[in-house]
Amino acid sequence: MNTPILRVEGLEISCTNKQGTEPLVHQLSFDIMGGQVFGLVGGSGSGKTLTCMSILNILGGTLAVTGGSIELCGGQLLGKSPMEMRCIRGKEIAFAMQNPMSAFNPVMTIGAHFVETIRTHIPLSKREAIKYAVDYLNQVGLANGEMLLRKYPFQLSSGMLQRVMIAMAVCLKPRLLIADEPTTALDTGCQLDILKLLDRMRNQYGMSILLVSHDFGVIAQLADEVGVMCEGRLVERASVHHIFDSPEHEYTRALLGARRQLAGKGDIHHVEGGTRSDEYVRV
Image (cartoon, rainbow, N blue to C red):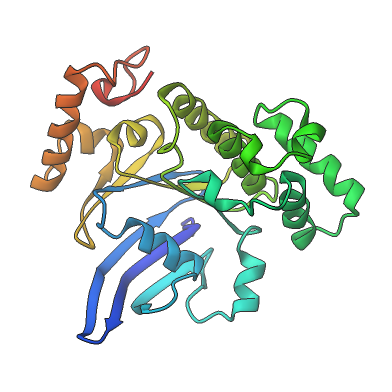
């Protein structure tokens, strides 16, 4: 029996304030197999991003994991030291944020970000790291990589920055890529390009993807299995086809009903061949 790449079991996340401790995520459980795309969908405030932050062990301030376990390839992540997690982030688990501009230091060039990421985990010289970075920029469809590395984040479009972020994420060949709303800041054309790119990277490197979104159109395009979150709980989990064809929870049906209304307005259409929940897939 194959061991899941990621296993989240009974996860509890709480916030502590002057009024006491408030639970935010309740008994959350799911797993992701090798090469699988697991879609985590739900409205704002449902706990999706908190779940991602707990996997990366970057919850801070008043937030904390108060129960459950998170395993990567059978090894427990909770309780690891900051130094141990720094070795895991990037190399074993990569993260693509929903707002690419906020992921970059505005006073550092793209090259400085990229080279630092590479050399933190791979023993390469600066010249070798630059060549390595250029190769991955080419792989995500960005030509003139050497020129791009000399630019600052504000000099690139949101779509280009998202491609740079994905190149930085996959260049270390992580076992798991967490993509938190990776298409939110992009127009429809760029959204489809990024989803196709993620799918190609998944197939090329065999990595698993935790795809977080509030958009069922994005989930339908890429996910193999879907978990629906509502108020910090996983209310439904099934294959992508079952979720779209036979949703069981009333919250899932409500979300899909909202998407059908938008489909009537023409912002989502049929995919060629009708292979995926047609009315929800962007083209």
